[in-house]
Amino acid sequence: MDYESLRVGEIDPELNKVVTKMVIQHHDFVVYLDEELDTQWHVREVGDPVRFGKVLNAVADVELRSDFLRDDERTFTRVRLLAGEALARVIDDRDEDAGMNAIQHAEAIISKRNAELSRRWYYLAAQRLVLAFIAFAAFAWVTRNWLPWNTLLGRTTFQFIFCSVAGAVGALISIITRSHSIELDAMSGELAHQIESRARIVTGMVAASAFGLATKLGWLSIFHGNPDSLTFLVLLGLVCGASERAVPNFLSRFDPAGERPHGAGKHDGKDETRVKPST
Image (tube, rainbow, N blue to C red; front, side, top):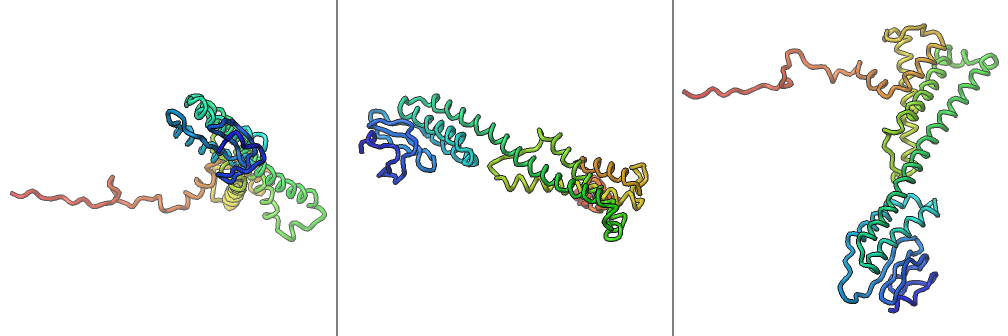
C-alpha cells in the first residue's frame, strides 16, 4: 500500500478507519487520527527496525487519560494531535526523546484541564445545593408570620431548619478552604464529583443538627449559649458544618468499640503461653 495515497476523509483499507486528521504522511509510513481522534499508524520497515514501544505505551496512556476532554473539542483535538506527533517523531526522526517531549506537553495540558474541570464540577454541585437550601430557609423566614410553620412543624423543628442550613453553609466554607487538600480526578466523571460534594454538604447538615439537638437536650456542655435561641443554633450549625471532624468525634462518644476491657495489657488481652524449661 502506498501510504501517500491516503487522503483526509477517506477510509483506511487496512484498518477500516476514517482519516480525520493527518499528522504525518510518507510513502513508507503514515500517522493520522481517525473519526474518534484515536491515533492510527502504518510503517513499512526500511533499514533498521523502528523501536518505539515506550512512546507507543505513552500514547495509549495519553489517549486513556484525555478521554474526559471529549466535550472540549479544541483541547481534546490538541492533546490527541500531540500524541500523534509523538509517534511521528519516533517513526520519522527515530528520536525517542522528541516523542516523549510531545507526550510531556500533552500530559501538562491534561493535568491542567483535569484540575480545572474536576473542581468546577465539585464546587458547582455543592454551591447549587447550598443555594437551594438557603432559598428554602429564606422562604420559610419571610413567610413565618403568614404560614403556620410552628403549627405544622413545631417551633423546635422550625428552628432546626435554619440550624441545618447553616451547617450546609459551613460545609461549603470547609470545601472552599480545603480545596488544596481534596483529591479530585476528572477521569472519574462528573456524577462522581457531584455525589461526593453533595455528600459533604449533607454531612455538614447532619453535624449541625446532631450537635444542636445534643446541646438542646443538655448532652453537651462545650457550647455556651441559649439552646432555645435561633441565633445560637445558626452559629452552632455554621461552626459544626465547617468542622470536618464534627460527626466522627460526636459519634465516638457513643461508640463502645473503642473501650478497652479492664485488665487488658499491652498485648490487647491476649494470653501469653510460657513454656517452663525442662530440668
